[in-house]
Image (cartoon, rainbow, N blue to C red; front, side, top):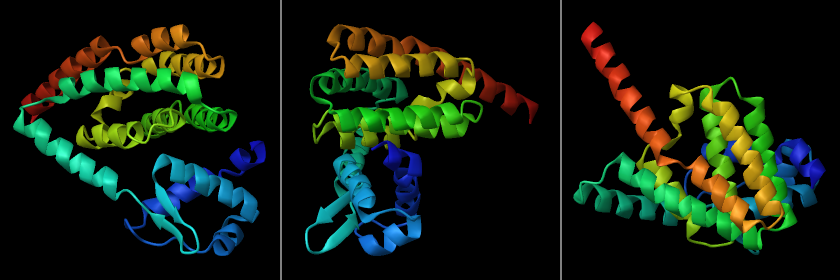
Length: 235
């Protein structure tokens, strides 16, 4: 598993799939193993993780396919619902706060050693981009999606992805507006990992409540509006 993570196969597969269409078939395992310079066993393990995340669908005897139609459909339905009810970003953030806290608590109960290895993979990727906020935010999102995958609940992952898509990932903007938040966010990420590893429900709930604190988002929204207003006045 450590070798798998070291090779960065997951990241390479994510990059490859990002340029493909939903329903498109991935190249053969033999071809991708040669392309990435890894064994087929290592490649299959990464493909299994992507299947658990809902990124691909593995059809025995037929191959591997890009699969997020359910996610896209869910995003469309939620978007219609939210706009029809005059929902705003803060209401989406409130839902995220509840949903992600419960996702963490579920992961505390059922996450496997492999799940924790992959959560840690994205934690370390975040560390590599502490000074590049856009990259930090991208891996921050992947970190939380991996926790959702570790909950082994088939609804949590596509639901969180849909919320992220609907909000255009603005719920991760806080680190752009408050760069110092990067350090505290990573500290909380590490604490979440340890709580999941130790099956510590009480600790996970306390850290999650702090990590998804809606007051931080409110402050960032206010600052963002002020900055946009100042820019408009300068034009």
